Amino acid sequence: MVGKLSTSHTDDRPVRLVQITDTHLGSADGETLLGLNTDQSLDDVLDIVQREQSHIDAMVCTGDIASAPNPSCYQRYIEQINSRFSCSQGWLPGNHDLADVMFTLDHPQRPAHRTMMLGAWLVVLLDTSVPGFVHGELSRAELAFLSQTLNEHSNTPTIVMLHHQPVVVGSEWIDQYIVRNSDALFAITDRHPQVKAISWGHVHQLFEQRRGETLLLATPSTCVQFKPDCDDFTVDTAMPGYRWYDLYPDGRIETGISRVTDKAYVIDYRSAGY
Ligand SMILES: [Fe+2]
View 1: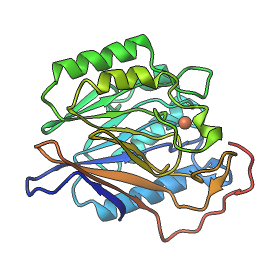
View 2: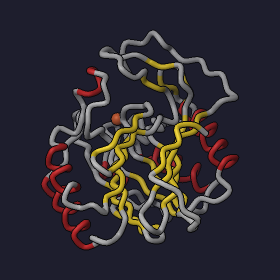
View 3: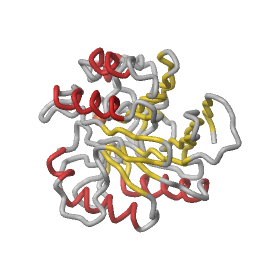
View 4: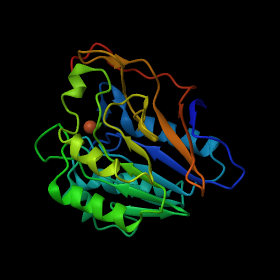
């Protein structure tokens, strides 16, 4: 594993959370994104999750589960995850998804999309998608939900998860699709020191920063990666990956990412967009 970031160490048993993101599954099994079979790369990432994690309490996918929001994509995602893992599942929509399709999907194992209680921890799942647009925005209802939830759990260590980045990551082409009203998000989370981390997908790259004591984290996609610090769309040669979190009862976090290492993919690195 690489990229381990820690708030400190403790011997208390933590809750183990796994985040995957931007699986970009096509309507049919085996469809490709920039030449990459996204079912295969998800499978490869889940292989390393199973290899590296002897126990998982929960798994969350932070959006762009589908490349096009066909119910069959979401059915296939759930079947794939549940064929391997019996832990609690959560998900939230990205710009390629449709929240209505995900949240009303007729499936007995449909993931949670609002909150998850994991031991002493709370995970809050936000919807930043704006139907018909690529950028992110939090509706008044989402902001009210966040505010109310944090008020009701003021002593519960919390991770807030969303799809779009609430801060610039340093690549102009994708930073135009930031959460446009992230000031409103931070106005709420800054009042709630129990928010230990804010975590997202969308940027298909590793990113780690702090806002005061709060960790700000982006996680690599399970498919193609975008090269950091590029103002024009640039595909990276970095491999697909995931993020793990150890959430300690006293509010401390350890987190890191891990990537596929033993595969070779055919990807169109010269593409001008996706
Ligand atoms: Fe996205």
